[in-house]
Length: 262
Image (cartoon, rainbow, N blue to C red; front, side, top):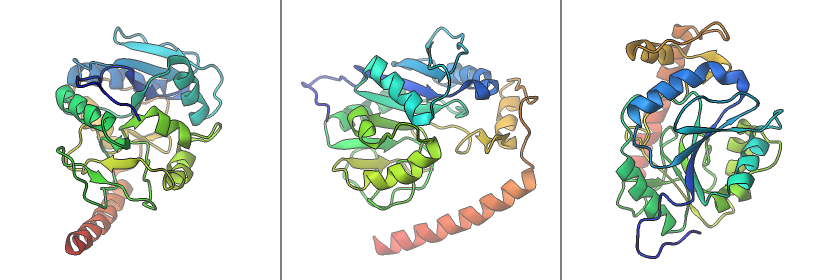
């Protein structure tokens, strides 16, 4: 694991990685406009993974991998080329909706670099299932937990991440099989509570199964951002609402059980 010499090194050899591909280029402009609006002081270099297309943005560098070789292989190419010690992982449809506190995020990363932490989920679900002694309100994701290393926004120690990446795997395979591979690692896997994200973006993603989530489009309309909806359809609202209600009831039941047991 990375270590420090008594001063803040959270900005050194860390970068933001936005994992994308050309097929999702319709999400790039909304992401970047909200990135400028809600994270203008991001202290880390931002790399954008694409196939052939280039991102036109002053704070973002394009890393074009060519023909798609799979999510993990594309990410490995960037890690091999740039050799970061750690990354903040994002995807192109994580539409920021509140300001990012860069100082607090740097403090969290500095804490992780000084302890045996391999992964910190910065947003999303599920909530951690164990308490953890740290000054930031983070909980622990225990071995065996489903989506222990989900691909929501997260800080990754790259040495830990490399142990879990398998060339050719897609993101879903990483979340499922990679979570099980992570059970054998000694590093801690931590997470924010869903209600208190360090990076706050709409729902868990703006695009689900190839279709726009209507709430993400609502967010963009409120922000005065035009979205090209000609490239992909939009989910119907009612089925999504009913699914979210069922999920929220299940989550509430699990949380109640966790509070009783702890």
